[in-house]
Amino acid sequence: MPRATALLVCSAVITAATAGCSGATASRSGGDGAPAYTVTPNSPAAKGSLDSITWSLYAEPYTLDYALAYDYPPNTVLANVCEQLLRVTPDMKVEPGLAVKYANPDPKTWVYTLRPGVKFHDGSTMTADDVVASLERHMDPATGSPWGSSFKNVASIKKSGPLEVTIRLSKPDVLLNELMAASPGTVESAAFLAKAGKDYGGPKGKVNCTGPYSLDSWAQGDSLTLKKNNAYWDRSLTPKTDTVKFTFIEDPSARTNAFLSGTADGGYLVPSSSLAQLRTSSKGKVYFGPNTAAADLAVLDLKGPLGDLKVRQALSMALDRKNIIKAAAGGIGVPAKAPAARGAWALAPEKADDYFKALPEPVYDVAGAKKLIAEAGATGRKITVVTSSLAPEISVVANAVQAAGKKIGLDVRLKAVAPEAYTSVFVDADARKGLDLVITNGYDNTPDPLEFYQYLRTGDFGNYGNWSDAEFDALFDKANAEPDAARRAELTAELQRIAVRELPIIPLYEAPYSVFLGSRVTGAPTGIAHLYYPWAASIGAAQ
Image (tube, rainbow, N blue to C red; front, side, top):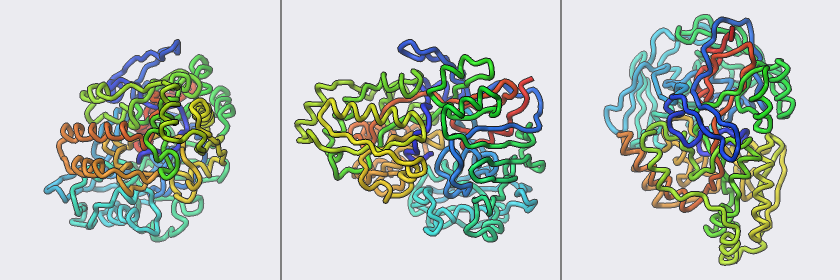
C-alpha cells in the first residue's frame, strides 16, 4: 500500500523464494509441519463467460477516490474501474497502461505519450488535460492525498502535446515514474472531477474512469456493484463476467461461511484462521500468489521507551516468530529478516537472496532481551499497542507482543479500537497520540523495494513514528536518482541494512498472498498485483 505500512488484514506475504515473484510456479514447505503450498501468479484460465459473480471484501471501502485510496478494500475495487499511466502485471512487472511509452530525456524530466482513443465510462475521450488534472490533485493540500509525498520532487506537470504530458522535477526521482503504475498514476476525467466536487468517489459522486468495469451502484453498508464496460480499450482483457458484486463481511467466520456456502464466489486475503478448512474444502480452492508485503510492528512514538534502540532490539528478540506464524498465519510463512519482504524485490530477484543472506537471522532470546531492557533502564516502562477486531491476526500478534513484553520487564498495554479507528492510525497523526506500536502489513505497490524504504525518509507521510536518520536520507536520495536498476538495488540493500540495524519498524513474518475461488469460477490473478491490475476481467466460468 503501498507506502511503507498499511494495516494488517491477513496473514499474507511472499515467501523466501524469488521464483514466485518473477511469475514462475514455486512449491514451498509450510514449515513446522504445516502443509506445503505453491506460489503462482494466476489461477487456471477461465473456460467461459458468466452473467455475474459475487466477491467478498473484508470491509467496505471508505472511498473510491483514487487520490485517497490507501488500503486493500478501495484498491481491490478500483483496480477494475480506474487505470494508471503504467500497469503492474500479476507476475510483478511494469508495462505500458494508459501511456503507451515514457521517456526520461534528462534526470529531472519524465515524458509520457498517451494511448489514443481511450474512452472514459461516460464516452468522452481521454486527453492530456485529464492526466494533468488527475495527477495534480495529489499535490493539492485540500485533497488530503496520502500519496502527496510521492510528488514531493515535482516542479510542474504540464500538457506538452494533445497526447503528451511532461513532469519536471526539482531533483531526480525514479520512484515517481514507477508509482505511475499505482494510485499516483491514476487518470480520471477532469470534467467529471470538477462536476462531482466533494462527492467524488463516494456513493453519491461515483467515479468516471477507463477500466474494464464501471461503477453501477453502491449501497452503503451492504454491497457495491460493477458492470462490464463494453467499450474497454484493451481487448486482451475484455471482461468475461458482466456484473461483479462486492459484499462487505468483516467477521472472518461469516466470510468463511460465505465462501463455503457459495454466497461469495471468491475473495482475496483469506482469513488465516480458516486456511486449513478452506484448503481441504470441496467447495473451492485456495491459491497462493506473489506478495510484496511483510507483517511488521511500526513504532509510532520514538519519544517514549521505544526511542531507545536497546528497547526496540529487546522487543524484537523477545518475539517467538515461529509460534506467531502458527497462530496468525496458519503455519504458512517464514520469520521476516527485514521490514520489506523478499517479494518486494521483483526488480532484482536474482540478487535478493544474497541481500537477505547478508542480514542477521531474527533471534529469539528472552534472557538477552531482558538484559537489554535493564541496561536501557526501561524495566516497568509502559508501551501501548493498538489492536482491533478488524482481523484475528491483529489480536493474535498484539497478544504475542504483550506476552513478550511481560517476559522481559515491559508493561505492554493493549488499546482496542474499532476497525475504522485502526485504519485512521495510518492516515491521521492525531489518531496515533498515546500509542507506541501498531501491527502493520508493509507492502510495495511496484516491483521496486526502494518504494518501501521511501516511507522511512524524514518527513514522509508513511513515516508514522517520525524516525529520522541523516545517513538513510542521503542514501535514499542517491538511490532515487539512480536510473540503473541493478545499481539502485545495491543502494536499496544498504538502506535495508540500516533499517534492520535501527529498527524503526520491527519485522515479524512473511507469508504468501491468498485468494479463495469457489468451484464455479477461475481466472483470477492470485497475488498482490490485483490492487492495480484489472483482475476481475479475467474471471469466468471454471467449466
